[in-house]
Length: 208
Image (cartoon, rainbow, N blue to C red):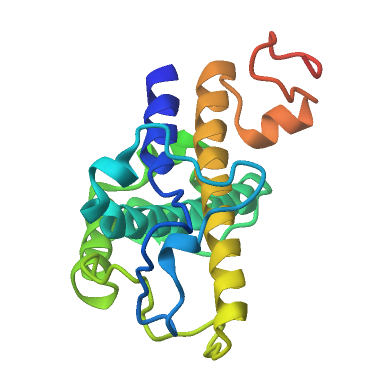
């Protein structure tokens, strides 16, 4: 688990870039990508020195960070919703007589999905990655705007992109922390909060 958390932190470290570097603007209304994500209190955070040694890889790494952040934000929201037992009505798989409400919360939920369902999920991922929102489009702007509204002001767009990056970083740590805590405690998020068990390093009873 420590290796997983360390790898996550290292993977996101290269995304913090200094504004002192030569400007690299994208089609996002000429927003400077090198200035995005450089926020207090850390400011520029590049402990491995990749910005100096591999500057040509910055654009791809930023795109990876942005996409992983978006996926993680969707994941943590879905985790919170499912752990509060908010589910779709009806059947996930009529042939298997499996209702949405039958899928357990937490990591074990994926084991309840039939193989055909997992194949459909993977096919959808492939469609998104290869056609709808291709990974090769590094600027992450897929023409849908901010809730359908295109933001023309570069300063406002930069602020919202900073918010997205930081929320994505928090979500990546959040979903990873949730999975680690579930494995360590054997309790889902809902079970931990119901028991008042906030820390994953206790015995499963009480706050710590």
